[in-house]
Length: 317
Image 1 (cartoon, rainbow, N blue to C red):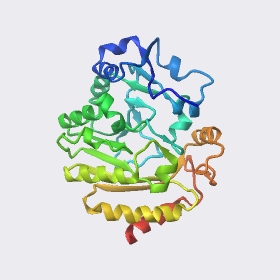
Image 2 (image 1 turned 135 degrees about the vertical axis):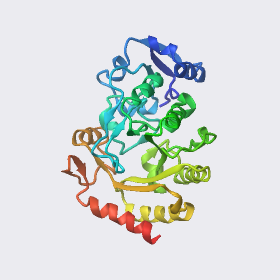
Image 3 (image 1 turned 60 degrees about the vertical axis):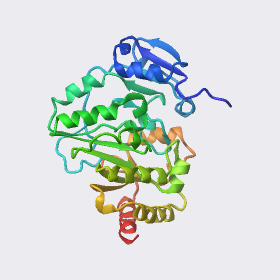
């Protein structure tokens, strides 16, 4: 079956055209069909949507974010020692289609929402400082950088506010979009890494392990703070061997002493979210392994062993 190209149709609230981000996106997609909407939720939260089908040809929704801009960080995430931990979403949903992604269990739609009023978000951020803010929590912000420039916006914000600290987490190979910027001590670029087989099979559209490692080296060479994230570790047939190979490749390609930190964690998800993920993908190999409810989420019964396994592999590799 033939599908429309990505973002062949763009839904837009009337107010968005007064913002530079919206104008930039319109210039990038001059041939798309533009459809006016009253409110982004009229499209994004509509009934009887097929998430898997939409992922094959996602549409773009441009909106102005109203109300709360920041939320307390999830207990399912590493706080990296910060007491004041927040996240924000300039974008909802991702370019990639990772089979184990919790967004599949949270959002009713696979279409992408871009909130074009980043200026308002940055102004609100000043009110919660000092703070550690994850700005790429519900999307891959760097993967959209060629359309939005939002990563640049956040880095510029941190240049003006030393009491702000942000993490931009990504699976992209798009470091070149910000490589001209001056590295800042309060900005961490965090790459999520997966074994070669896992990236190829379960992370549709995402760059290869080799491409991500090349981006990490480039960022380190330019003086950026870089966090390496092997999180989540997912189970699939032969996962131990795949992660053993990944540990060897990572230690061969990256000088770990140059990293600001390494984060390792096993797959986990909120219970309701996990149930919807399973319903969406009943035949998924990576979602078929036994899970148990513990610590407020669904986790592998041997979670500690899974994490320790990779930690030991990294030490021995």
